[in-house]
Length: 443
Image 1: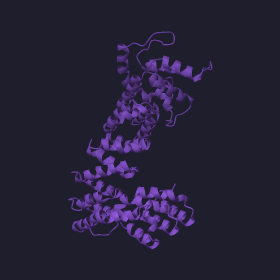
Image 2: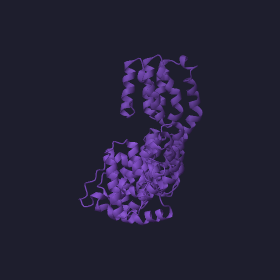
Image 3: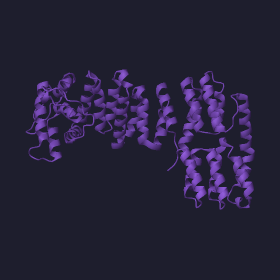
Image 4: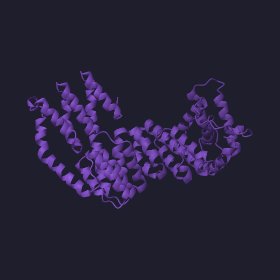
């Protein structure tokens, strides 16, 4: 800890004194009366801690932790220093040692165990006070790290309060983002109760840290993150943009999640914020279908030129056709595809049904698969009809089905392809592996 932490501890001391006056610690042989955490008191507590850590009596770790906890609230700053690998107050005459950001030795482990065993409200108050009064920019980052190490749901509130009080320049620092990301992951992994606090915790973070926080939660929550992101949407413009970017970076893979996100994107195509409309135009390419195409066609006439350009690229991708950025031409295409879906697809779907398929000549089936592969905008309704052809007795048909699913290219199509990795024919297996590898969906 040394002199560099003395100022922060001095700022903490008045709050600690007030709490002690309101609620004196219990008396007893193993729980001495706690004096205000002046520097001399911290030095005295530090020496006691050092004696416990030396463990000349060979006590078990749990017994050492109990002795540390018995020192009461004044031990919190000392344990904080131990956890970070900083010199203790008893070494105040020595120069401060370099930080050991990866402190994980037995002393650091004992310190963490004792901090967890002390009254949580006292530990949390200390962390917030130290971060609030720190002159050293590293101190709030260290507080975030220790709050994460505590691995309990209530630490989310500490993270929120500490980051909200940071200098705005510090909020945008990559080290802060990385430390916060790791702290959130640690807390969510260790304490299931933390999930309940996410809807209030996340919007309370500075907007600059939204991306890091969403990434952290998404890495732990898995498929559940989609529901959370959609529920959080609308809190603020900054968070909305961060949520859309995270959904773009890590889109849902389940059908229900994809449908929900597609609806959210289509709803936001009319947002008054150009950045949101641009992100919507970019992300809708991942959710092909006539409804998404209709929203993109509307964005071709957006007042923002960049929105128009992005919408045109996305349209060409989900449609599989190379029309110019002419809204009238695209509306004509949309009308033609809508008619095809309503009038032609039901008959073709019947042709591919289990009862009819054995009577369909191979040549006609190959022609049909080649035709359907160009109907990318209808992939969601065709995938279940094409998938069973991966089990057709003829190798040529199975290869054509692989090609069709590849060209349609939705996650559902790729999921069907993964089932063909064990095909009895080496040519089919090679085709599937090539497709999945190219699309970065290899096992």
